[in-house]
Structures are given as C-alpha cells and as structure tokens.
Length: 268
Image (cartoon, helix red, strand yellow):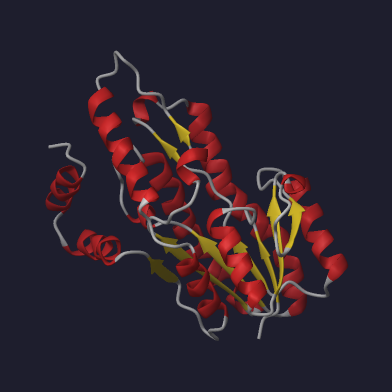
C-alpha cells in the first residue's frame, strides 16, 4: 500500500479535503502552498511550492525526501480558474492559466519522475475537470487548459508505464470550494457586446460552485484510486448530470450538443 503522498495546492478546497482524509487514513501527507506560513490549521505538513517555478518545485520535493525515503503518490491539484469572453480576456491571463493548469503539473511530474524510477513505483494523479471534456461558453480557456492536461497525461502514462509508474486523471464537476473567489474574472464591461450573456453566465457558474458537492467526495475517490492496483486512465467525479454531459458529447451530433449547451446557459 502506498504510504507517502505529496499534494500540490493543499491549503484549501479539494486539495485540503484530500490531505485531511488521507491523513485520517494513516498516510503521511505533504501538501504544498505558495504561502504555507499563512495556514495555521493544517493537519498535515505544508511546504512552500509555486508550480510555476521549477526551483521551487525541486526544493519542495527535496524537502519531502529529507523526511521520507520515497514518494509513493503525487496528486497534481494546484490550479486556477478563469472566466470571460475569450475576445476580452487578456493574453497575460490566458498564459497564466496554462502555466498553472498545464505547465505546472508537467513540471511537477518531470521533477518527481527520477525518484519514482529509482523506486520502481509511483502513482501520479492529476486533478483535471469535467469542463475539460467540452468547450464551455465564457470558460473556454479553463476548459482548454484542463483538456490539454488530460491529453498530455494520456501520452505520459504510456511513456512511463515501463518504469512501474501509473498515471491517471480525475475530473471533478462542481464542488463547494473557494475557486470562484480566487479565479480570474474578465471584467463585465459596460460597452461590451457580451455584457448580458457573460454576466448571466457568470452568475450561473458561481451558483453551481456554491451549490456544488462536498469535496470529501473527491477525497474518497482519490483514496479508492490509490488503493487500486491498476487504476483507469480517466475518472469523473460529480453529479449524474455532469457525468452524463460527457456521454452526450460523445454520442450526439456536434450541433445538437451545442444547442443543448446554449439552452443550458440561456444563450439561445
């Protein structure tokens, strides 16, 4: 059974829920945060890490290995939200989203692979999103960054199986976390042609998060996966409607599915 777990973005939301639950189950958990000194109530060790800084990633992994002989599980959870009409979303914010949601996990994986090869074993779990299975209006950049991570991990999984390393993606739906407060929102501009549609969609997205599931559901799913000898490539954790939306995307004609999304968001 794996015993040592490293979770990026472990100070709040889904990451904290996973860390708390795995600690309760007897795992030795190390979480990361850009500002761990500000967190005083963590039940597991929090280390400083910025997934956008390779030196910071390497330093955190080295710190873990000072305390334990191996890293059994890495959970790439750190991520950022971003909303807005793509036309009105600054390029700098688009790049930031991809740097954190795609390049960050890749760099964490690259940093930990030598240790896992040495061990001959390792689990790498990547928290993606059900939004990554479809282009959602006013959340297109977020959807794209999570979709890119899903596909990247499909490739890396095949490349690293020979070393005894197992990678999987876990796509959550809406959970009650603080992501809505911390994500980048393109401002609703008074003279914008998207003003009404974006404003209404943003309210709907925030309501979905506020009324989302308990992050403990994700924690239990992660625990079950790391106790599985041969995990699947993709997992989805969310409401029945959210999971069915992926199936419908696969089987419906493109324009039929698009009309369904437009109606859901009140855009047509």
